[in-house]
Amino acid sequence: MPEITVTLVDHTNSPQLMPLIQKHLADIFSDLLTSSSETPLVNIRSIAMTPKAGDQDLVLHFVDNIANSYVAANMPGPPITPVDGGVTRPGPKMTGSEFYKFPTDKNGKSLGQFRAIGYAKLAAHEAMHNVTRLSNEKLHPQGGVGASPPQLPVNDANRKAFQAGLGNIPAQLL
Ligand SMILES: [Zn+2]
Image (cartoon, rainbow, N blue to C red; front, side, top):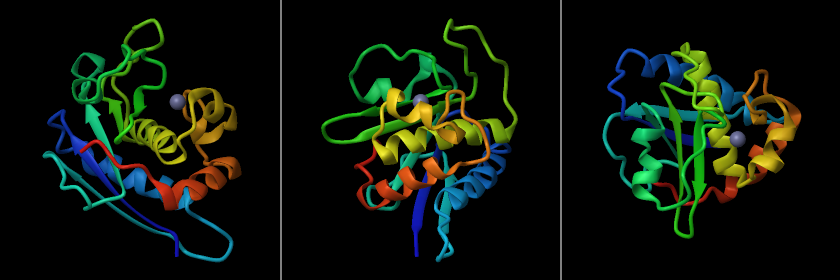
């Protein structure tokens, strides 16, 4: 049975929003893991503190904006460009993923605050980069939740790529 355990880490002090994002995101992961023969199992939680290593497969950080990037603070790299409403940075030891409460367009202009489903799409998009290890150039043409900006519903290309990466998810930025 395909199974994934996901931790959302809230760095934005949004205790009322997190359960809503979590619910939408669980639905998207269930769709990504769906195959013809087996029912997927998605375990998902949101916490406000650093998770323990080994307690989950995938960690997605929710931060206010690029200026408050948790990935940049913990993993050196080039400046983050606001392209997807989030970023995934693969590193030699681990991969860090985050999505933004106050996303901007590619020129840095605010897109306003999203509804929970919008944040779930951003988080799912970063999860796609994280699990599949695909670059923007490889992932975005898939469309669906792999598109930029990410769209629902999930499509077959998204499912195929996500399920292919499931057994080899990189170590996560905690
Ligand atoms: Zn992307």
